Length: 71
Image 1: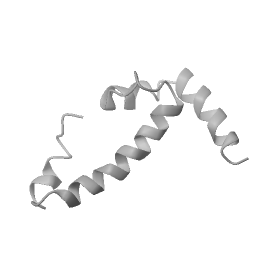
Image 2: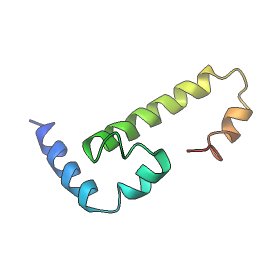
Image 3: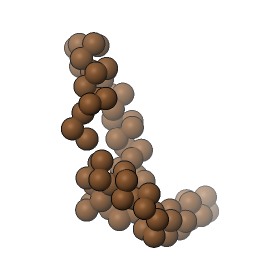
C-alpha cells in the first residue's frame, strides 16, 4: 500500500509541475519516463554515481568529472 500512495502523487506533480523539466533537461531522460520513470531514474543515477566513482582507478579526476559532467 505504501507504493500506491507515493506512486500516484509523483505522477501528477512532476507531470504538471516544472520539476520534471529541470531534472529532465539535465538528465535528458524525460523521453524515457514522463513522471514515474523520472523519479526512478533520479534514484538510479544517484546510486550509480557512487558506484562509477568507486570503479574509477583515479580518485582525483572522478571528483572533478561528476561536477562539470556533460549531464
